[in-house]
Amino acid sequence: MMMIVSHRIAPSLPVPDSVLRMFPDLDDVKECEDRSQHGGRLRSFKHERGHWATYVYIPFQPQEEFLDLLDEVISILKKHDIIMNKMNEFHISQSQTVVLRHHWINLFVQSLRDRLSSMHRFLCIAEQLHVYTNSEKTRTFLGLEISVGKEQLLDVVAEVDQSLKEFNLQTFYQDPSFHVSLAWCVGDTAWKIGGCLKELQTVLDGFENAERLTRFYAEEIRCKAGNKSFRVSLKQ
Ligand code: AMP
Image 1: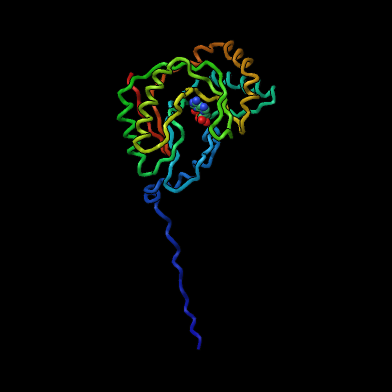
Image 2: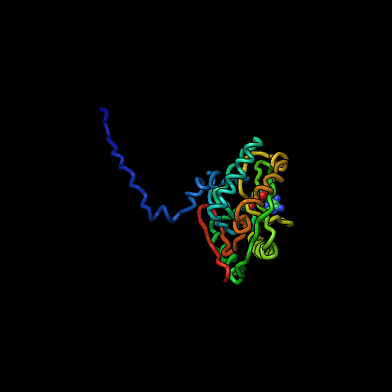
């Protein structure tokens, strides 16, 4: 005689939000994959769970008219058949993108705080257009190079580099060209953009209030690790 045994499978209970929040690194894959959120920055390392893309930067909040200026720059590039994407946030990088293990993040941020929180805010002027490519030559950026504020930026980078070294991470460029990236495109198109830099610079220099729009104070240092963001305020 055949016996039929019925197994009732209990529906699995949803995992409570509080438990999911205990493991925030489970979410970071989505964050890293969305390239549009990173102003064209491309992750050049394979994602591994618990390894977070991390970088240190100084934010720049542009005034409304700065975005008008940027629109003009983009449209001039278009006339030369160069299609570039506007950055959706503006900053001065103080590190390359490095990979930090999740459990090191708080210690790394503490190291940055210890080194940077006694520094004072400083003036930056970003007025010279310059073309940059990433090290893999897969992205080209049009940026505004910093002319005033370089010494203080070098001081910040020296401290950030010390923190990076403590965690065995790659330090910043030996000869950094501090800048605010304005726009990016795929591939190495530096030669093409370079061909219209003079024209773009003339437009920028002649733009109403250009001097006011390209000067700002570095008031805080930020560190982004995966989807977490930390800030160190500089003294007044
Ligand atoms: P960022 O907007 O700060 O991410 O910079 C855009 C790109 O400029 C990055 O991919 C950097 O690798 C690249 N770059 C190339 N040369 C330099 C340099 N000397 N100093 C800083 N960034 C550079």
